[in-house]
Image 1: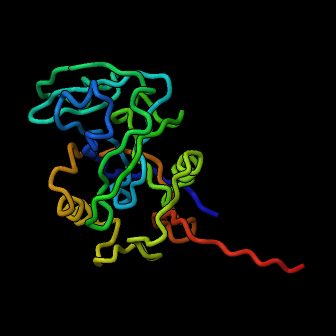
Image 2: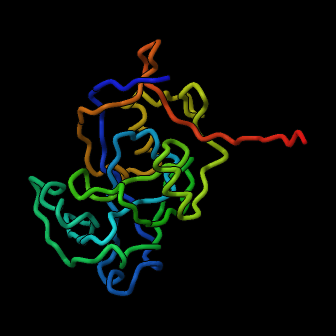
Length: 219
């Protein structure tokens, strides 16, 4: 059994560089394009496998500084508050599905993919959510529906430590580690008050881990 407690946590908007050669021709003309994905659990980014968009919605490619970013059209002003920006084009969700980007797992640049699901919101974050199937039931179900498996060689142990010794709830060290993998990976850092699962007995925060299961045929 478990319980939820209201806590204040760090949220980040992470930027993932698109593999330009996989993008549609109308986006390739904009130069480097980055997907901005929101997460309330930055420590799960090392296991990112996909980014989820809201179905049947509008997404904008926005010029901000030296980069071009993709966010939900309804959240442009919120994401780029206190900075200048220029909306270059608005696209439908369907125009972005299946395209790929770089992830940062274990210091190796791998490929993630753009998918859609109703869990993505046009009211929170950027309208794009980071998916780590190793660390959440919803993430796992969305990835499973899109034939995306979880990472078997986990960078995280059962006690909440990365292989390099950083504990996942030491947010400062986690963010430093993410930036060591890619100096540009964090676009924005904020705090949020939200409900998070805790151990009912010890009152400590919990983590979700995907594990391999074995079943014996006893017939």
